[in-house]
Image (cartoon, rainbow, N blue to C red):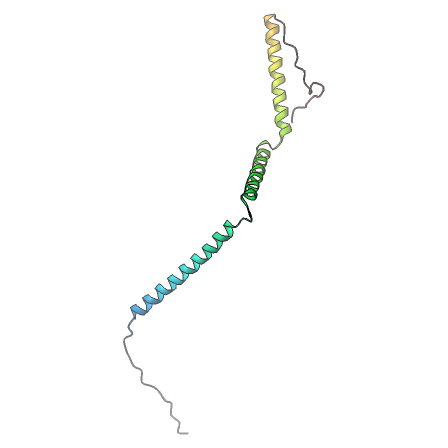
Length: 128
């Protein structure tokens, strides 16, 4: 069996870093990434600017209707339960009227007439 294992003589050489080639590759990669990012940003900007209005009149109507919608949502959010607020206001007015009547009676003067109110027949129960 006269086969020998062939080996190659190892060449011990100092490997040098080719700074010019690696620097060029880094600059090229950075340029490609920044160019891709700029193209993507341009596309997004074009999509954001295209709102679908074809005329200034359409833009104005969309702007006004959007503003009205925002205002109504904000008012609904702030008032949450308008009945509760109204009940509190009516009760405060009744208390103030009763205080005025009691002060007038203490002084001996004639109390003011009760105001005519559509809520006169209704009794609003206090919130528990």
